[in-house]
Length: 247
Image (cartoon, one colour):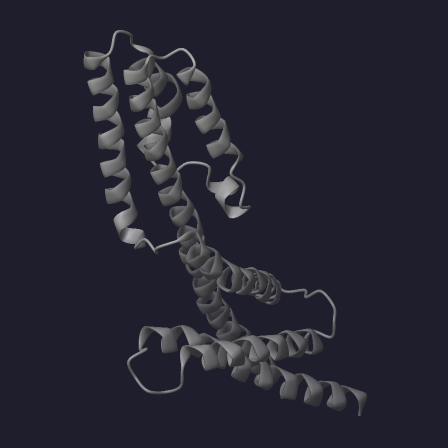
């Protein structure tokens, strides 16, 4: 009778878990067909969170709070834990990063960021070349080559932007400020323009870091979910195939 009770418990928790996982995967489908009137994305997200918590409870009840044995079950276990962890992390990102982007100013379209970075870099390079021809020293172009050339090439200080640290920007602007003490008025004007371009580039880097994090998270969480479905189907197939051999 104990074996029958265990089988009944695992049967119920297992199929409830399958149902919740299928519902959770439907959220990614819902986002792709946003034009269809089947509830707002915000409502779906709330259900996604609550059903995700329920699925976690059902999962651990189904495995009876113990580690699995077979390779399929172990893979399922690892995939489910990865989904849980990435889901919690994604919830944090989706709650915090959009607010930070809004507070920082006008939104920059992610796909356009490389274009804007290229424009700012061209302006900075042109400024350094102009300073070399119009001033009596090579201070501005030398500083650009040694301190700023790599900064303007592409996204920089990714982690700093994620943790809201401006220490890199403060350091760059301080170095420019320190250099101004040794410049004449014409060179100082170029240094100030260069400072503005550094701020523009850092603003673009900030948007890139936060938006890239949101996009990369989806490329991790969603494929793992589909991988879980595959191994879930394998698990169900082997369970019922094993039962039929015993009967």
